[in-house]
Amino acid sequence: MKKKQYKRMKTLSKNKNSSWLVNKKDEKQNKHYEKFCKLYDHILEKTNTDYSKWLLIDANDKKSASDECTPVISEYIGRKKSQKSTKNRAHRKHMNIRKRK
Image 1 (tube, rainbow, N blue to C red):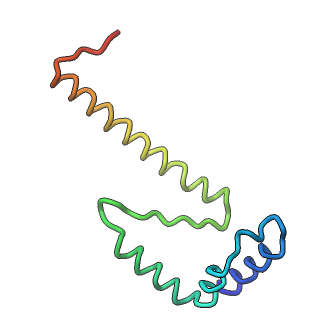
Image 2: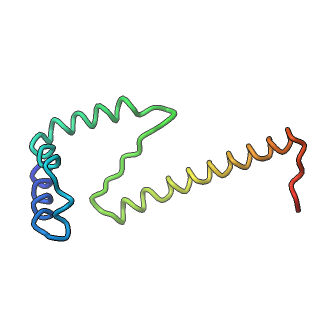
């Protein structure tokens, strides 16, 4: 993976339209790739909780990444709408407010 990443960075840096995407920080991370991977894994492990779970998406293929993200985002939006609707009903009941028709 380290070689693949290095090759990708070189390709990006040679192209005038994408060279701005690569900087010294990226080069440092690639140089210490294994160390950074372990650190990222540690951070994900420590911050993945029941309350706030990480969803790891393989982003090597944009279409499959999008296909994987879409249902998760849709479910989240649906939950938020449901929570908001429940809160509004409770608030109207508490304030004795009727919804206009």
